[in-house]
Image (cartoon, rainbow, N blue to C red; front, side, top):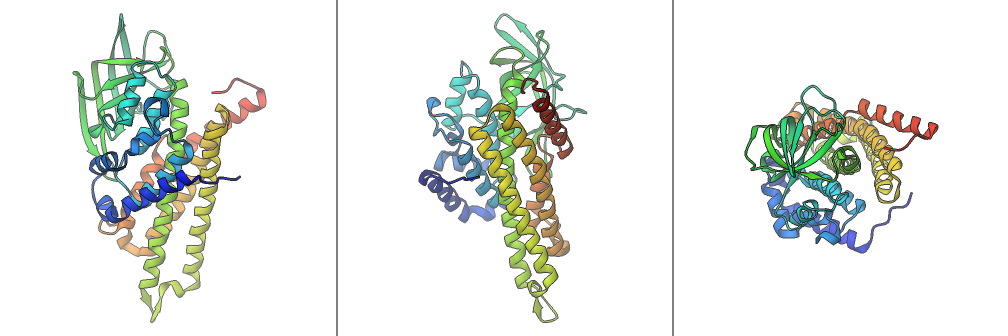
Length: 371
């Protein structure tokens, strides 16, 4: 596996790292409410990186997204770039209006679009949709309730899944300020602004054909899963760095804690876990870039399973090696730990992705059509 970065990608990573470095304390202390995102939009046009060039974007690919997400994870930056990746991937698969004009709005920083799919008491499966949409000519009206919609309070638009008379779920673009929307806002454990949303006959614009939500969202969610994997790598790198620095500062029996061999071994295990995660993220990134649909889906599922396991190990070790204060908000480690928990819970659990990987493997053996 060879993943070499172009000069442009190296400049992108270094520019973002330099931008985030002097702001890191503010980023890790602030609730995830969009202030930092506005700065990245205005100063370095970050959302355009995820938008194809034909829609006035930079046209970055999976490798660019991976580099960006790792730096954002390292800085624990309170920005919804992953949501931009998901939205642009779904919209670009159906570039007719209103998708095309909305992609241009995202590239210009005028729109922030998040997925509203999960519903109460359902696992994260794209077919599990209770919301409905009625059609009157060209007008679609959506009714139903969506749960735990990340960044909904700061979003300008929602991508909403709902069932029409067609039967299978369809995808709709909804203005967040549309009449009939009721939000219940709350903070997730990592401080991210989140909402439960009720749609009461809200007007929405159909994206693609009726019944096409699964086809549009599967590759988009795979891209988002891999993006979160890259963010997890950045988090693990920073947690390990901070833990190593802490063990060098703290002393016991007149010696720094890092001089004890047992603790050195734990740091080594954390470093090994990071490298294993890096390999899985690289593999999944290359699959997104060059693979077929089933290969992309399998790589994303395998990466999710492996990285979640390593993220849990590294974050737990970091907290334990810091002692009791490792879980406090006053220490950055505690906030990284909370973000790690949210990443692990996003887009389904490890068990969900074991099942998905198994289903894909069965299709490979039987020759069934891909996802």
